[in-house]
Amino acid sequence: MEPQATPTESASPYGEYTQDEFFVRSVSALWVGDLPDDGAIVAAGAEACAQLSSGTAKDAVLVVTGDDPNAADNNFQVVKFAINVYCPEFDS
Image 1 (cartoon, rainbow, N blue to C red):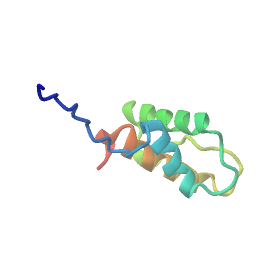
Image 2: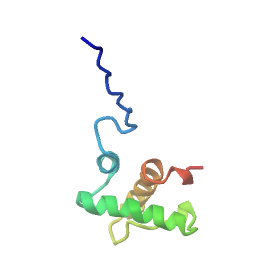
Image 3: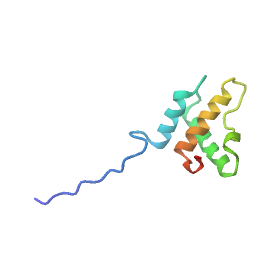
Image 4: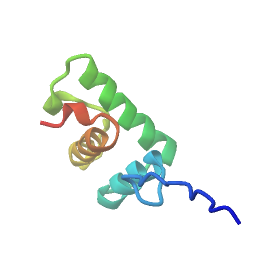
């Protein structure tokens, strides 16, 4: 019997989650107030990276808006995790 090659699995930096699932779980864990749906969270992360790519300073990225008193804190979390998960080139 010939030895069979075992496939090598690349270790995902997100464990058992996809990149989007990891991002949503990370943001959701620290979100204050009414949580948007997963699609909206992912879209906010993508928008944060788009703003950074266009030259917006990290502290000026605005993807969570509204009258909610927690909007600024939630925005901070989305931007922080977007950089961590989607656009680490902006981590400095």
